[in-house]
Length: 332
Ligand code: TXA
Ligand code: MG
Image 1 (spheres, rainbow, N blue to C red):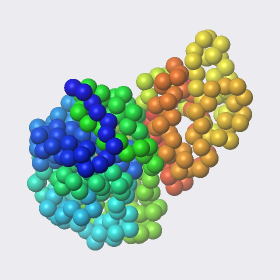
Image 2 (cartoon, rainbow, N blue to C red; image 1 turned 45 degrees about the vertical axis):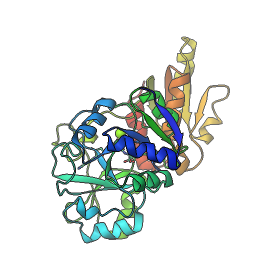
Image 3 (cartoon, rainbow, N blue to C red; image 1 turned 120 degrees about the vertical axis):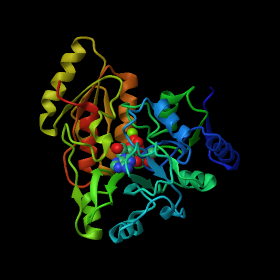
Image 4 (cartoon, helix red, strand yellow; image 1 turned 180 degrees about the horizontal axis):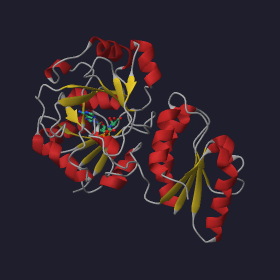
């Protein structure tokens, strides 16, 4: 199958809609990462998404809808706090989990009685979702376990030949997957951290819990138990207090003929001299926006990425460090 990458216009939207109506999959941009979408009412189309990605079949998908879609046709109850959060943060990088009405295919939630709903703010995503006017089940548009795609060329390199169409939407400016929030209980609970932080949720509705996955837990959000986001090369992670050790490790590997790249913030990069550096930027939002992009760049040019975690664990840094640790794993 030939995979085409098309700018979003009337013609490509029409093609996208035809593919979706025929049970196929279309990759589309969002403000977080690119998604791989299929008609959530069509079980076969949804199962196909799992096959294309090589995704474990107990890891449920998020349903994406446009901002005027009637969500109450999909879920049975929206608590007051969720309405308040939706008013404050949607459209945007916040996915909300509700009790499902069972109207979409059971393949979407892998048999759970809940449904995750997301209203992305990216104008290309809104155009696509409005044009098809269907709930679109969509995981990130990468091969399972690889780094999420923040540019159409990342989708292309993972899925070329496996899907017919990628809608071009430029670089994703958020850069990390959405916050997943359980809205089935008395208070909201963060299942996956993201750019909408627990503090932001608390300042809107008061209390907010946070779920910390432990090995062996009956997973509340099954995706949490899987290794995610790794580049196709060796990686390792140092703390910001260990810059000297990180540079020594770089030099040692280089001396053995290994192609190495350092991944660090711009300040730290100034200490790197002639070494190859992937610069994360200067602000927390830049770190988030650049992390996955640079992990993908790194695996193209290096056999080993040595990451140095930027300072700060507040706000969105929690999500940045969470993704960086999952991608770059343990120390050398
Ligand atoms: O930003 C995003 O969320 C991107 C873009 C494409 O929208 N999508 C994304 O999807 O990251 P995916 O499939 O890579 O991650 C979905 C996460 C998984 O951790 C999954 O376990 C969780 O959402 N999830 C989905 N449905 C759920 C449900 N009913 N209950 C609890 N967690 C759920
Ligand atoms: Mg994913």
